[in-house]
Length: 200
Image (cartoon, rainbow, N blue to C red; front, side):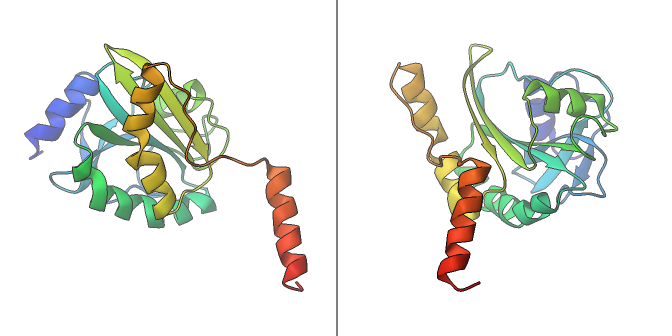
């Protein structure tokens, strides 16, 4: 494998990597497991599939984790925004690590114990889910979770401002997520009202 840079990143955030494989993008045909984005070479590197350890990073930095299911239609829509966003913007965030946890269908159908246990650890029950972490001195200081797919402009709000929200939280300030999640009932009512207005 060419990129010594990504190997040292993996060793720092995970430990000695297992057999590494590279993919241009991660999707339903890829092996289940954990992937990290190598911004220097524009590839996703599968760095763990076999161990049962949970991905709970101890290395300081910011982590953006996309929980992806191979059988998830909404994930395929999210891919249309996620991959271009990461590709075009990751250089702006050198201390952010972009990670994908891929299973077939959540923790219960997954050929990677690590990915399955990571889904469980972060209580992922919607697909896709994006989890952002701020780790300092080896411990998680701040976390945000977003259920459902985010469009490019929403990713910018969420990822682009995460550092400032995390640092504000660390200082004891009140932090508001840039995108407030609505309950399914409210979303459904809005869709019904929108349909009634449009005569649908």
